[in-house]
Image 1 (tube, rainbow, N blue to C red):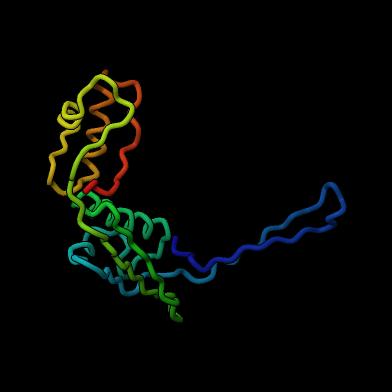
Image 2 (cartoon, rainbow, N blue to C red):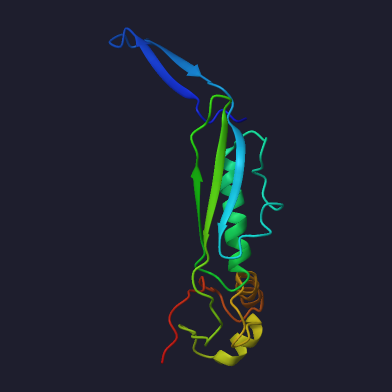
Length: 171
C-alpha cells in the first residue's frame, strides 16, 4: 500500500511469433505517505477524526475516495443532496510525503416541499407520503428517502418503485 507513484510497462519479444513472450516491468517507486490533511469548505470541522486518510499513513486512493464519499453521505443526510467533494493531492516531497486536501461544496440546503407521484392509479399520494415517512418542510435526508422506497416496495401495493428524483418545487 502507498505506492501511488508506481509505474508499469511491458515489452514483447518476437511480436510476429504467435507464441511471443510478454514481459511486464514494474517499478514501485517509493511509498507515498500522507502529509498534511485539510478538509475545507462549509462546516468542514469535525471530519478529520472520521476519515481514514491521516498524516503519517500510507496514501491509498481507495481510502481517499471512501473518505470523500463518507463526507458526501453525511451532507446528503443533513439536507444537502447536491454536495460534492473535490480532492487535491500535493506533489510528493523527497521523503514521499504528500499533502491531501478535500474541498467540500455542500450546495443548497433542501427541504421536502411536496411529493409528486407518477404512474400510480389507485393509492392516494398522501398515503404514499405517509408510508415513506417524509414530512413536508423537513430537511432532505437520503437515508429517509432510501428507507421510504424500501417501505413502499415491502408494502405490497406496488410491483415497482422507481428511484426518487429531486426537482424544483412548482410555484
